[in-house]
Image (cartoon, rainbow, N blue to C red; front, side, top):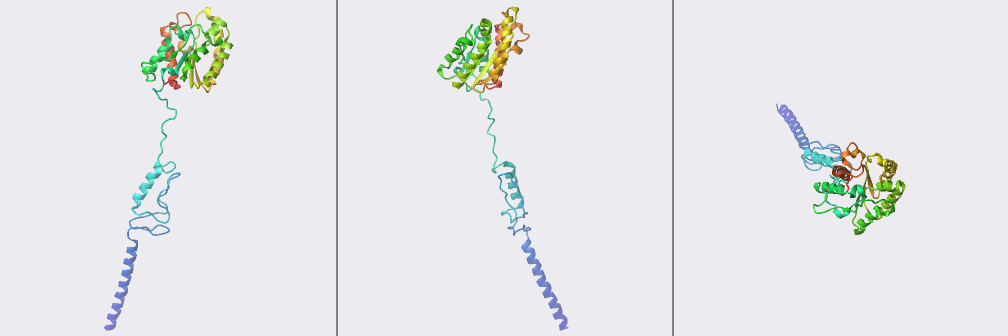
Length: 297
């Protein structure tokens, strides 16, 4: 009987030791599974690499353990960091479009208008451009452009160029709106002289740091009496356009007025100079080019 009791006691003792060992192992592993390369602090479950951040970002945990806290919070923070960082680990905006055209920065005395009677006969073209500029917040209500255009003048013989130099005496001119070459063809029949004078004028503007030019060239004259004028303008037009298009300082924008005027005989009474309707249509066309190319905005 005593032998049986000793046998049973021995078995119970062994079972007790086994239970203690199993309980101890359970305590060691309670709350998580250790990651490869080391144990994790209480409450954290880690993998060999939780989050990979984009270029320049920092992984919050990898092989070897996680920082204190839950897996979900650590991963969420890292994911947010990853999504907000393109490089350098932080969100960076573009800072706005560098090509954005800012309004309201141009003074009237920074814009010169030069040319001959197509502009100067009534100055209606300039007035319409100014009206549009004021309506669009690009010119103060009490300001005007420097309109030095004079009827009968040519590009050659330093006539239209002298209009520019007079406007530029204050050193403020940044933008030039112009025509030219019409009288060189009408009065002299010499488009090449107008082209040479324009080349020299643009060189002067470059030295003066003029930023932009809008060169608006004539519509087709109406009437058989202007046949020779049309022939000269047709020959000069592509040459002057090529000159304008090739400029980078100042930047020159070319406007061919033929599409604006074609089919509108009401835009002129004498076949070459604009009526009030012609001046408004021309001024509006020039203004649209100015807006598109950020000229005097």
